[in-house]
Length: 96
Length: 171
Image (cartoon, rainbow over all chains, first blue to last red; front, side, top):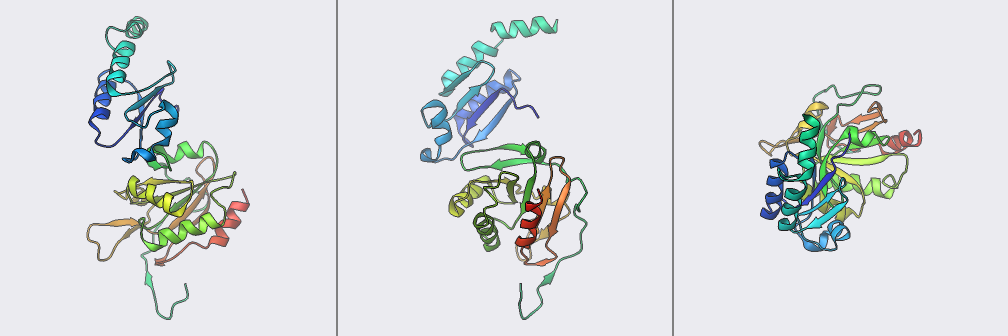
């Protein structure tokens, strides 16, 4: 099985994480979810990636981007994969 | 176990046997740092897997089984991935890994569907509506073909660790 390019580090029932999920779904992006612990101190995996223990955090292998903060992530996804993005234009072009 | 009375015999079942291909399934796979959906076939792509079904986390058999696997050094073996499975949630699995002090992974299957696929369902007397896998051990190779199988025929029962270890040594 080939793993999706996008990995979302999330906490169950965290509204900021769900906000990112909605955008991923809206752009029909393939992603995998990695759930972390409610305790900040138990989130070393996220800390190693982003330097912070907050979720959501996202790793996008296709662009080499790693970031946290839902506002930043949503903005990044819109810029990279949204209807106005160059990426989206390219994909439409290929499909046509 | 050697007890001065009869323990409960479990109904006869038809689980995967040596030479059969074990059913594939996908469930949250819980490690020490996070959990994510994974299929058994994702793991076997990397090599043999020892799949250990055990009673829910917190029950003493779960504790004993993990202690024994830890103390025998199975977790550190390069030739096999040791993976547990119980009906406990990912949160409970995380606690189990921490309390047993093991760096391993467990599938979480609260709906007990995997036990149904493997025909090893154990309906728990006195816990209405709750079923879990009966204790069972399957060693599968890279193609999920069963190399060794043990399924409890009485309740409670524990794997024959020396026998499992002999099968691991054959890898």
